[in-house]
Length: 122
Length: 109
View 1 (cartoon, rainbow over the protein chains, first blue to last red):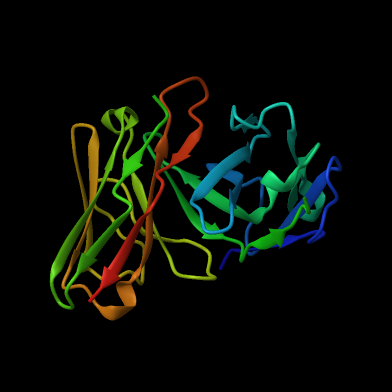
View 2: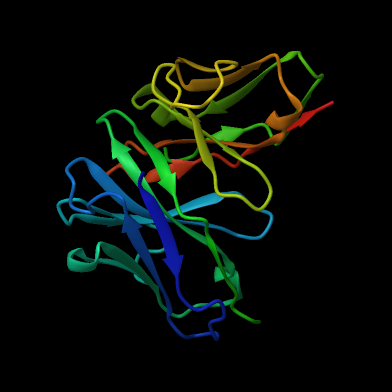
C-alpha cells in the first residue's frame, strides 16, 4: 500500500520560501509510469495543481506559478520536495502531495498525502 | 483551453440519482477523473477513464463522456455521498498541465 506524507513548517513569513517534503512509502518514486505532484487548496476553495516531477525526472509547473516554484526529488530517500518562493498571504493553503498514475490519455491521482496547512500571515 | 467548469452545487434526495457535469475543450482529447472530498479529508478518486472505479468505490458511482462534457452519476445517492466532487483532466497545451474543475457541492436531502 503506497502512502505519502507531507512535512514542513506550518507557518512561513511573507517574502520567504515555503519548503515542503513528501515522503513516499510502499513504492519507489522511480517506478515507471508515475508522476509525483503537489496540489494545494486555499481555505474553502477548490484544488489547484502546482506541478509534478516524473519517475524519469522530468518536471513541469503550473504556468500560473512558474518562476516561484521548484520541485525536486531525493531518490535515495524516496522523497520529493516543493519550494515556493516569495510567498504572500495568498499562498496560505493546504498543500497535498499525490501520486499520479499515467495512462497516456488520462491520469489518476490515486494516492494522496493527508495534506498540511501552511499559513502565511498578512 | 485549460479551463474546466462545473456547477457549484446540486442537491439530491436520498436514494435518488444525481448527475454532475464537467465541461472543457480538453475533455475532447482527455478523459476526466473524478474525486470526492469530504471536509477535512484529502480527495479520493472515485471514477476515471471511460467508466472505471478503483477498488472499494461503490458501483453507484459511474462516469461518462460526450463531446466536451464529462459526467459523474451517483445512482441511489446515500447520505455518505454528501461531499465536494472535482473533475480533473489534462490541458491540451504544451506539456499537458493538469487541471481541476472548481468543484460541485453535492447535498443529500
